[in-house]
Length: 143
Image (cartoon, rainbow, N blue to C red; front, top):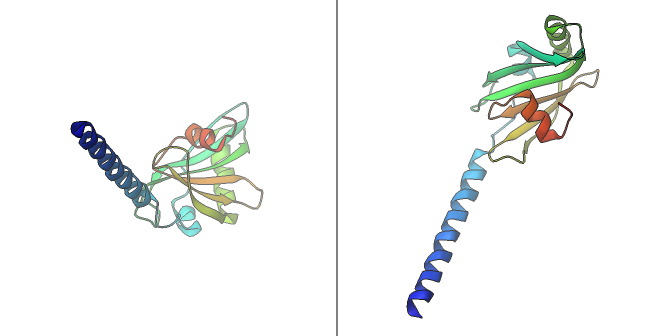
């Protein structure tokens, strides 16, 4: 009986310690700030993915003006090819504004910041760096 009681107490203590460490780690992973619009504009976008004439433009990895690594995505653009999509995205960055964030994603350690341009294209910075499809899945957008 005594052994069961000690085992149960030890299990509960270890569970509490583990839970507190996970909580502390989770809190530690939250970015201090979102990338500034000016730093996103400075880095720009260098890739595009699309099909059926609908394209997303992105920068796979950059720190911008933060201590974290981010991916940045903007879209969706109706474009004839990747170059057309990149040109449209680069033009849209000139009217980019920050909307809010950072917001935690439903994946461990995933965070996003939201932006928008004057044409209401959705733009997202995500950390850790992630794919376009991962961001769309997390936001429940069609891929």
